[in-house]
Length: 330
Ligand code: GLU
Image 1 (tube, rainbow, N blue to C red):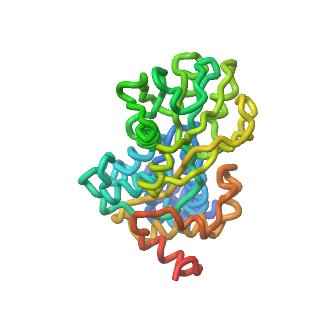
Image 2: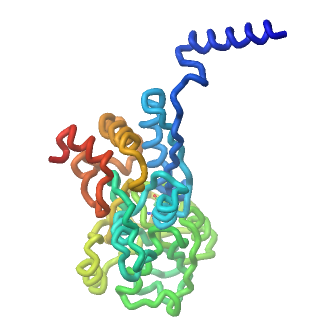
Image 3: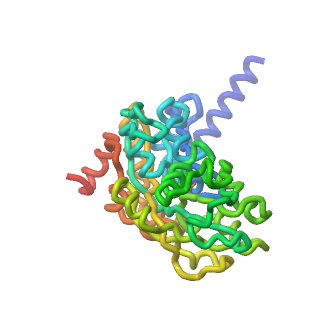
């Protein structure tokens, strides 16, 4: 019996060697890291997938295995990284600023998240307001009295819709029927006539807006602009004017770009993550930049230099090491 066991062990060992890898018990330890994203029809989810793909390709070299989790969005991701439930996450640049600084009026008022670390920024995101044609909503002011999804708690967009509404003098608690459902559910509700409009802060193109514009219910993108918004951008400098690139969605009734404002998606972690781990991820994304850029159409505008902009938490030392090595930082 003993002999048979020995033989089996020897065969398994030999096979493993033949297959090119060291047997499991002598292989270096693998660190599992999870990247928090957003709804599966947004851009964060495929972004987490793109980053994981780059680093997992070198799993043997780094001993890192990255997986992706669909979550409620930016605010959830910051909190989960800070509590150690997630190692990395995609987070709106405005949310990164608010969390690190404990900005008044934000979820982190008086509770600055000093261990939050920036890694790089990614694609631009636009505050996207979309309404059914039937609702008659043509401007942000027309939202009064309507059923509007302003975002789930934990999402990035909830803060942006609240800011936009407040800036134009609409009280979301009194002046409209606010819903707080996840962005992935909003397109279905709009198509079924159960809401009149929804806000989503997201990169373009994305699956959720495709779904919202491709059904029987005719929909249009609504401009998010006006004097009140100009005042908002002056006060909150993490907001910048942008547009929704409507050409991506032939199903919508508009065809020209629609003015709005936006932020950037950023990749963040905690100060407790080891330098080698953050370095490895940054290196794989930047060394394979052209390959990475092709993984999502929202990355078309990315440049390596641009990916170091829009960050407000301190850069993680593992990221700094790489940026200095390749001359992206002095
Ligand atoms: N910006 C959204 C948020 O922070 C997520 C967008 C996406 O998933 O692409 O919740």
